[in-house]
Length: 218
Image (tube, rainbow, N blue to C red; front, side, top):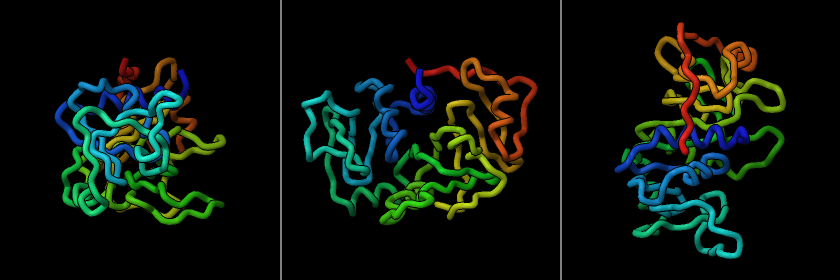
């Protein structure tokens, strides 16, 4: 199982029937592959889809059905398309139960930096700031390190997306919860030892006496 699939399967277990969930560009979009179509979870994309499904089979792509990053997606039965005003009204109005976003850095305060990519020109932060500020739960889905460098750090060096603390961090190594007392290690990935997680994290981690292994979605 790839690191990306470990993350996506674990995030899928955080989502519940009857909720409206935004999936960010990139790795988070793949979470819907691990959620049954009839789960009762509705996925929203800020470009105006409510009821987004996973990428269609090759040859079945529809150029009018894409996620916010331009990747091809499908639409589940009963899906709706809306304009940008309504889509961002859902986000800014606090109607999203959760958002799942990629991350470049998360610090000991639970602050996320995810919109400026070093060395690349980006057109803007898109919906990232609105999503982190407006969704009830903010789940960061990212690999634990980048080119061997920790992405969970004492203090973000990249521009923050929001000063609001995120709800949960899910990586290919661990599940970490930001709290008033700092970052708490809640779970470890299958076959991953706590020492490996600590070595890959430059931020301070609180480690409970017992850290269970992740349970991944089917």
